[in-house]
Image (tube, rainbow, N blue to C red):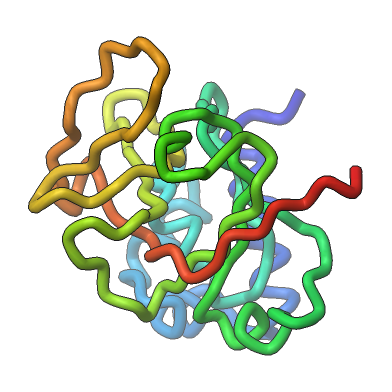
Length: 188
């Protein structure tokens, strides 16, 4: 199995090929420091942070590398075609996730529902959001679907859980998008 570095190197190489850019212009256009990318390419750093990989992948319109050991129990990217949403999704403002949790079942959001999140819409108190929880210690990320309550993310479920509200600090926990649409797909 390829190491995380191998997977990241493959993604960076593909991004350079797809955009026809050398490392420094690619980094600048993706919104990261050029030195971060060149140090990685020259073996001075072992791996890139997941946020850096995401920026490169988003700029080059590539799938991101899931870190080794990353856990995504609550939602996963949905690759199916939803024709009526194609324009918004292709414009980069929206992304689709398939729910894998009952964390928001009191709001009518069930496993296998498809949620469309909008990156451009500012989250307000009470909104359903997609967030990423980063573990800088392990270099992994977890995708969450929760409700925004003040500066915290919370669940709304009938399940017995020991979930505690999660504080949003933009370094360990960051909101990626606000719910725009919910689709119940039962065709599979």
